[in-house]
Image (cartoon, rainbow, N blue to C red; front, side):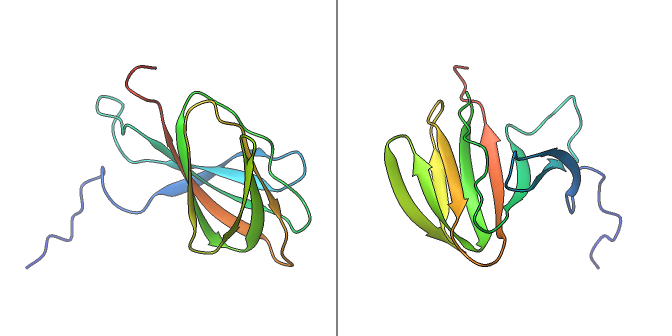
Length: 120
């Protein structure tokens, strides 16, 4: 019979408001259930970009992966562009500027996973 008493370090992740993009929408940070004595090597956030707006241009020390949950947008990273749709994933190395503009009629929803490299 399965154990119904899940440990407090496992299970669904709660999200709390973190900040708002200048024009795009809110960002919510995942509150991972791992103890401070054994933190995860990554963090997670979910966010949205309203139609005809962009998230803030972002550049940071961490590597990052975006998972597009819904919507469509034009991704700019470094000097390149690409169209992303629901189900697409984009990865950014440290210090690569990146931003997405929502080109669709509905909010673009995404999840970010980010972490520092071992040498940072």
